[in-house]
Length: 332
Image 1 (cartoon, rainbow, N blue to C red):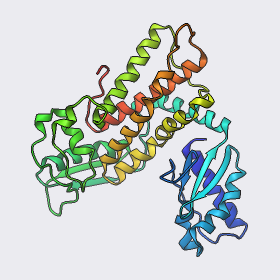
Image 2: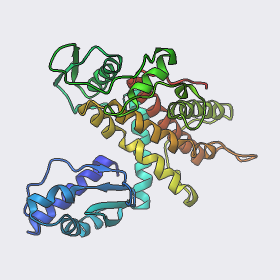
Image 3: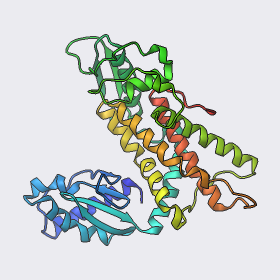
């Protein structure tokens, strides 16, 4: 069950509650499904109950409790838990989780670097008016690519009133080199002052740019080593009980990538994509040691499936860095 399919399942639960007379609301067109936030649990979470509470005239937790049984008996869902003010936390059944892995990996392999590109802004023209300032120019350039990836077109000009004005860079980022300079200006939120320091050049764990590029290079290295061992990637079942947590941590951001790209384009916020790439990198790195056979172990279907998932993460990292105007190295 993909996030899109789960969103439809959530909306179906809302429709059932309306039809049964327990909720009096207009069924929304879309239910946002994301990874659980702090204090959450399970595979996915949705704030649909908070969204419907006001029009329903009921507290969010009561709306969530109405939806719980209608979600819990849906195919592919193992458990639904209410947390916080009314978030619905959804755990997928084991087979649904396995099917999701295969579906997401196959979609990424089919679409390549275009995975996550969509039509959220189809037919729209986004006029960006920016000041004469290096960070504003770099952010606008990234927004142009993000908008195009969502089917729209963005124009950039220097005119008043300004519509895109991130906090300016405190100094010229050019000495960092093109990739580190891009990252230094794009990774912070627009209202945060960017750090133009040599930390962006350090090859160590504390540097988010290094982790993202290192994760991509490691995936490429694993693929080369798999080829030397005589096997290639093939999507399929992966998880052993020991791998379930690592798998979930990686699968969730990969499945969420299309939503992140749409949000980054809609809100003119390339920083959302940059932070998302860090999440993907931090999830794939612990997974990579399980991809290749160890010792005298022979390559199996599980190894081919793990390789497919790792390569899918590498594809997302490379595609995301490209949208930010940053190179994804094969070696690092």
